[in-house]
Image 1: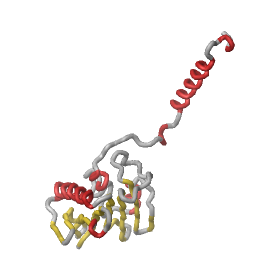
Image 2: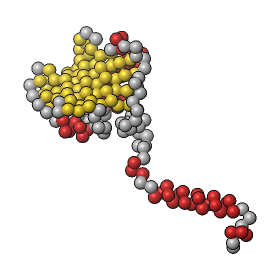
Image 3: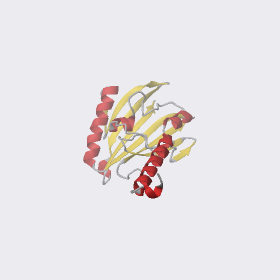
Image 4: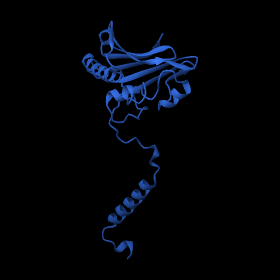
Length: 193
């Protein structure tokens, strides 16, 4: 059969393009595609799944280990400090390079002394103070379940985590929304003598 004899050559063209497209797509390297959805809770995104003190790290770790635990290159880095701004994406938690909305993100500062992690500061920004209050309750429930009752000190609630090399590891949670035009929570993990 000759091409001139085909009554509808556009169908042949469409079939050829479709076949080529399917072959091309199936041969692509999919390793760089966006991560598949993995829904996690906001608490899990912010503090981890509970297997470590904070996300995938713990106080006392060295800088190299902490660097390897975060999936993103730090926004700022020096020998005693790592800083990250991350999007609050609970559907695609591994999409750390996505744009972080100014009113829906969290920032983590890891601070080191003599190459050991001594404190972790996490600031969580949400659109409203009521959203911050609701999230604070969820975080407080998580810490109380994990570490027992916390003590209230000013505007912060503090939980004792454990003793480490003669110091007590603690976590402090406070709502700083009143000082801003949006919701802001402050979470600090630290060592105290």
